[in-house]
Structure formats: structure tokens, C-alpha cells
Length: 455
Image (cartoon, rainbow, N blue to C red; front, side):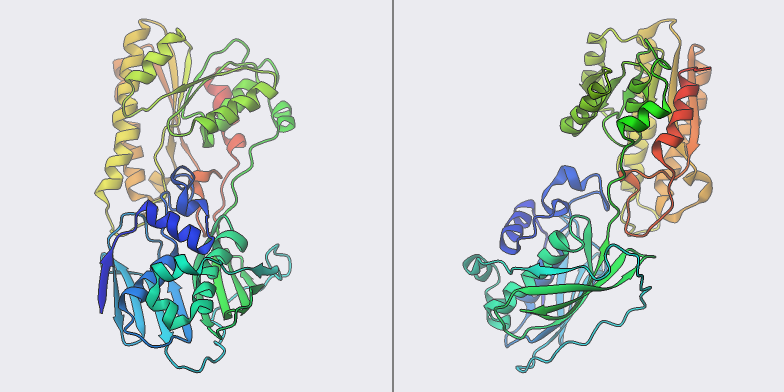
């Protein structure tokens, strides 16, 4: 049997109510945009349960083993197909979720999943334990999954839903994502208990033993925590209070990532930056509040570089004639790789790093007359690294570099400070596989001193 569908945001909210898994990766578009994979993700358990609900011919299910291959994004058209006792949910003929069920009426304890695990004694995760209470709303659950309520029993269905809550809300929690699980369904109404038994540091992958309403093992990936910005004490130690006194830099994309760090460093040195944001005013306000706490000041404006007219009008209201600008506008860098070349990704990168940068520079130089301007344009070492997952990103950045050369020749009063930055620890670079990144403030402070012409 086969079934097809796509998942909407309303579907997400309903499953969050049903399961208790309200992880913002699933239900908060703004939050999901700044963590891997850069868009809201369908609950993995929702895709699995929908696939079984749509294809299972009937009869009891006593055990389930599942592997979550890749995340399903909202709006993707997926297909569920059942062959024997194996369910596969696919996107573009690529497996997203693979599930095998046992239909014996006698439940037996599931064997542990076979994994090669680097056991560690110093991990914060190892031996962590707790309890998850299965969601209580039988009526909603049965209305959404009536076949599975019969196949699992209501207690078993609640237990399956509670796995989503375990991974998404409890352990690993906020930045967790399913890897796989293997459980039997004893039909108990007990709570779900768990204990972390192994942690693989190479892949940020933990394995848990579960018992109670389900019995078996669950594995999940642990996403990187949000990089911590330097404290006020760090900033005062790094930057002299008058290093950038009376300077008025413009920070395009100053509410997050490298833009936020640069805004804090500049303000700590006595500058009064103009910080622009695109999607999140609260994020910009948080940076502004930190600057105020440092005893400095800034201004905040909305600026969409893809349609800069209103942003430039707001900028002109401040009569800005500052001598320095920083261009940190960027879409999500790390994308899910489905093809060796993804034209849509290249278009989005080119739009920001080439088209929008050109329009911004052209308009700024037109309005400045003979006043000089220095712009920092961050490029990337991904150009020479040849990382396959960053192919479109690197192509667009290289095109941006060539555009910078042309702009320098056209505008004699324009200086473009271009540097190929290494991988830096920001929310943009978070994935589930650990990778070494440089500290944002250590990378940016020398750049800022150079751009601001500090001796």
C-alpha cells in the first residue's frame, strides 16, 4: 500500500499538542531558520505514525524498529509505502524514514540496536536518566490515528508519541533529533523511563535504554548549543573604551552571528553603530540592550537587502554619513544536499552576496558624493577548501569577490576590505557533526580595527 501527502504548519501544531513535543524546530519558523537544517522540520515520529496509519492493513503491532535517515521539511511531498512489514517514507525517491514492525500478538523485549559507540566517562550525557509521562489526550490521538490506536492499543500509541517528547523535549531536548529506535509495546500504562547508556562524541550521538510503556533502545543526535557571546567583562577586557570613539559604522545584519559580535565590539570601543535586522526585531533589541548595559548607544533599523529601498530611506532619516559599513547579510549557509548541484540554493546565495550587495553599494555611493567609504565584505575559505556541501555557497562568494574588484575600479572613493574568513562558531555553522570553528570575537576584532583604521 502507498500514501502521499505534505505536512503543513497546522499539522505540526496538532502533533505538538498530541505528543507534547513542542520543540521550536517544529513549531517556530523564526527559531528553525537559524539552526540546522535552516527550516521547520516535521516531527520524525509524526511522519512514521502517519505512514503506518495510512498503509497498515490491520492487526496488532507489538514491536517497532525505525531509522530516521534525513529530516523532512514542511511542504515537501512525501510518499509512504508498505512492503511486507517494512514501511518507507520517501522524498524524491530518497528514504527519509525506514520502519519495520512486528505483528506478533506476543510482545517480546526488543534487542538493543547494534551500534559502534565510543563510550565516554566524561560526557555530560552519559548516565543521564529521567521519566516522560505519555500524553493524556486519548480523544485527539485516536481521532488522528484511529488504525494505530487499534494496532498498538491506546497505551502503546501514547508510548510511541512520548518518544517524540523524549527526544525533542527531554533528552537530548531542544537541539535533539531522532537517529533510530527499537522498542516493543507491552501494553503497559506506565510512564516511559530512560537512561543514557552510550555517547559517541564523534557524531554527538547518544543511546538510551527505555522501559515502561515501551521497552528497548532509542538513539538521537545532539545538536550544538548556541555559541555564547563574550560577556561584558570580556568585551571591556578586549576593547579599549575609546578605541572607536565618535565613529558611526553601519552593520548590515547586526542582530545575529558575526554582525552581533561586531556591533558589541564596536560599541564597547565607543562607536555608535547603526544595527540592521531583517527577520527578528527581538534579536536586534537584545543586542541593543546589551550595548546600553555597556554604557554605549546604537540605533536599530529594519533592512531587507533584497528590497533595500525602505531600509535606505530609514538610514537617510539618521543622515548617516559614516565612513565604515559591514555587510553580514546572509541566508542559511548549510543546506540539505539532495543533488550535486542545487540551482535554487545558488540563486538565493547569489541574490544576497552579489545582486543585493551591488545595489546597496551603488545606492550608498550615489548618495555620498565624494565622501569616502570602507565596506567590509566577508568571504569564505570554503572557496579554496572545495567542501562539496558548500558548493553553491562558495560559487556565490567567489562571484561576490569578483564584483568587489569591479566596484573598487568604478568608485575611487570606495575601499572594500575583503577577507576569506575561516569556519567560525556561530548559529549558522551548527550541524550535528562536530567541527572545529574559530571564536567570533577573536576573528572579528582584528578586522574591525583594520576597517576602523585603528593604529
